[in-house]
Image (tube, rainbow, N blue to C red; front, side, top):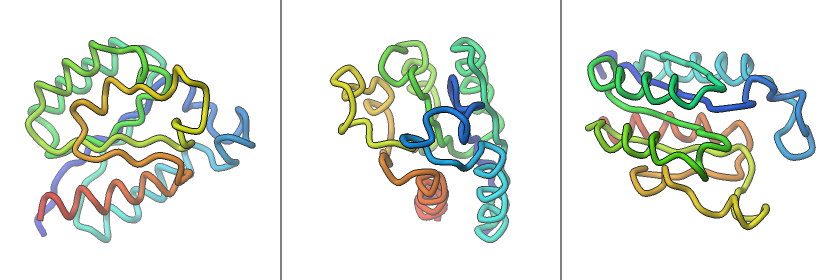
Length: 146
């Protein structure tokens, strides 16, 4: 498989992964997740572009940039999952595969978390598998890209 760039985008508060509500989100940090993803991406022949922002507009800009820089997007939009039409619109302008990831099972949580704007565009949704969800998403992207 030739090298393909996969953009992994993380939304608000994921910079606090491992510190914030470990009973819900676990004890792994976002740096741990990035390291695990980088290792697997290497095995799969993929190149990783791993980013996090608390700013909705920055995420939108990165998604727009992915149109020329990436072959697929893995996104954990965090709280923007439930609120951001802007992120959905940006994803709709991206031609490659999109996999939505959530560390927790959003469907077992508060009712407002059950709706995802991003799911309307996502080719797959992984929720409730902890940080392993990112690795599952990478494997699915590799499968989709052949």
